[in-house]
Picture (cartoon, rainbow, N blue to C red):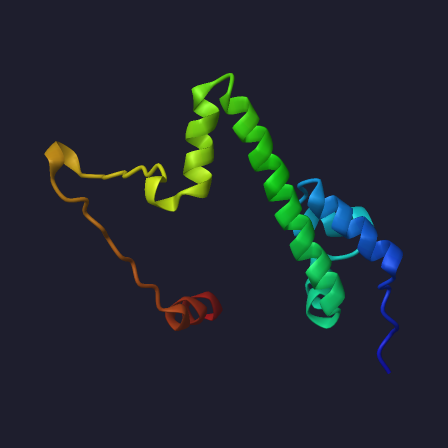
Length: 124
């Protein structure tokens, strides 16, 4: 017989508020005294709870974007950050290219170990 769920509306509310405040699912679960896997199961099992979490995340995003927009009135970099977050086609990208000595290729060496030989030599 499965043990009873610890899910309660009060515990769910605590998690919703934690997510709305900006905590990750992992940290919100820790605040509520549960495992992140339990939180994931609850999101699948309790559709109303999942909807509350989705709404909390949307409200959090709205609040943070408003604050970023307001900050843009004082500092253009906040607008740049807002653009990066809200308009993927303008998102900042960074490309890192690596090369070997004198711009050449990077040599890659593979070592294949046969575990059977290792066990045989250890026991032998």
